[in-house]
Image (cartoon, rainbow, N blue to C red; front, side, top):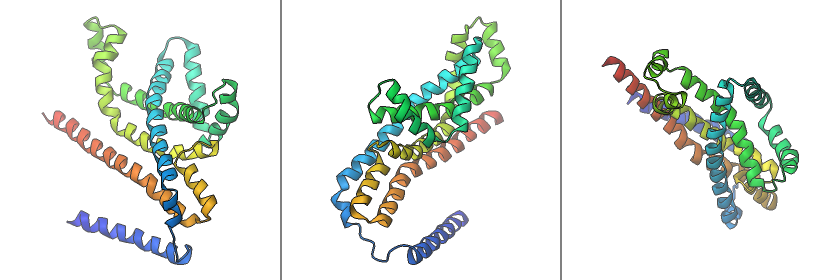
Length: 251
């Protein structure tokens, strides 16, 4: 009961903040009728955002694994390539990378599709962070398990396939769900590429209707509809996996 009361109190404080902004900064006569006329354009952009985010995350999982394996490789050139790529990604804003990818890299490799330029940009960007998630999860596996695998004659591939990855998948689920939420939010920057995702669609309708406050409210709600379930999923997975670990430890 105390948690419910605290939650409602916190929600009320946010409501008061919104009311102050609404009464002092927003127009008093909000009109969403013009957005109803363009509901199909807006919905298509929203679906495109979901598609871009989903495809990008799948590719980012592969990119992250490749970067991790390159970093662990005995071939020094691959080590340095992985580190250089991650250093560039970690030190450069996504909007800058997106612009370079769209105007220069995509052109150089004759990739004309805005969708695929956007997807690959996000995949290589998010994949760099996922590589470190893989690294942290794999390094958390006790050395005894690696030694036991060698004792039973497991190859490196068999060790990863049957011992490492089953445990890694469980431990990386919460941060991966968080990365998916970040991917959805990051996809908004692809509007600067002219990609027909949610933000770009909304900006188009805003420029036609000149009803900017309503558009920003719809944008906020649209992204919250996508990200709140993921945030709740992350918390659920963290609680469930923590309980599982604690329960097994106690036994």
